[in-house]
Amino acid sequence: MDGPDPASRPGPAPGPPSGSDLRALIPQVIGVLVRRGADFAAAEDAVQDALVESLRSWPADPPRDPRAWLIAVGWRKFLDAARSDSARRRREDLATAEQVVASSSYSPLLPGDRGDAGDPRAQGDRRDVDDTLWLYFLCAHPALPMPSAIALTLRAVGGLTTRQIARAFLVPEATMAQRISRAKRTLAGQRLDRPGDVATVLRVLYLVFNEGYTGEVDLAAEALRLTRQLSAAIDHPEVRGLLALMMLHHARRAARFGGAARGGAGGRGSGPGNGGDDDELIPLAEQDRRLWDADAIAEGTAILQAALARDQLGEYQAQAAIAALHADAPSTAETDWLQIVEWYDELLALRESPVARLGRAVAVGHADGPHAGLAALAEVPETLPRHAAARAYLHEQAGESATAARLFERAAAEATSMAERRYLARKAAELGERR
Image (cartoon, rainbow, N blue to C red; front, side, top):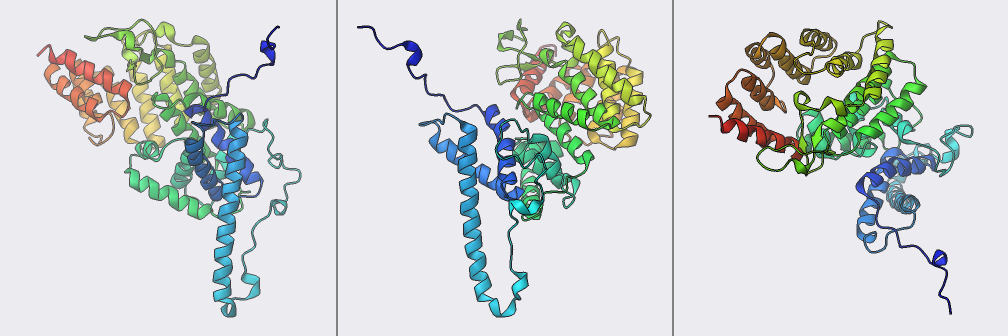
């Protein structure tokens, strides 16, 4: 007797989603809860509670539909918290009833109170609704100062950890944790119907892209996707400038890391890596430019040129101009470093930044010699990340191998990603052998 038709047999149970899949689901689930009537802070807390519960239950019993599971559990967590909060408030109201007028009683905002019958956000739990960019704008709430709005968005929607955000802001992790908590308290109970400033959203997208571009967390492509959406929706030269900047940097991604096949003794591997723990950073001067995406560079340059033609220069356009000059050069030696220094001067006139000053010092080192670069670098705080690496590079260019080796060793100890640490440690070892 023939056995059952293989096609009729149930397929294998799906495994738990990856970390990147979960990060993509978070804004979708928060968006559903907000559309159902939760305020943003409560929705974000409920989704975080649901994620904690998923860590306990999914390894043994992964759901067929992780998104639906997170929505169901997140909504239940929200309702449990709301009921608990309502019960607490009722007890407080009873205890002070004689002193409180009836009109001061709390009245929760219901979904129907939002006046959103014709709003595309009020579309239930549809899967084809992409809430991510909408949530970026909601987190950029007018009630929050820009640094707090950026931090909250990076944490709740961008998928970054508090430690990663603190590193991007150059502040202690505890300080950033307090900033995010204050932002959530500020938004608790607020009507999320006043989207915030475009500049705040641009800053968040920029920071998400930068964090993803380090290779530690793969967020760069998502930030680029959202910036494309924003560029299609808003005619603004700085939106175009940010899109161009991302495209020009992302075009080099395949050449920025080398796989573990590099081997020992500083050997180079044959294939590109993706920035994981087994890869090594390849700095711009050593990249195989044949791996760069020429089509993306051409598109990014065209977008930048159109933005610059509007004569409304902003910091993202200035940064994109620097990236375009690097992308246009056949090699480091043939790069127009004088023009790059001039663009850094434009950038610093628009927005003072120690990171930009560090980049300018390296450019000065190429344009006017390594000692001129070291003099410019002396104006940058030594506590800035990658300061030691920049000093090491300039001392190496000056032929001062012993000093460069010590500084590369220090930079390796301070590096925040394994790929960068591996490269810096190799440089320290190579230069140390020349002493």
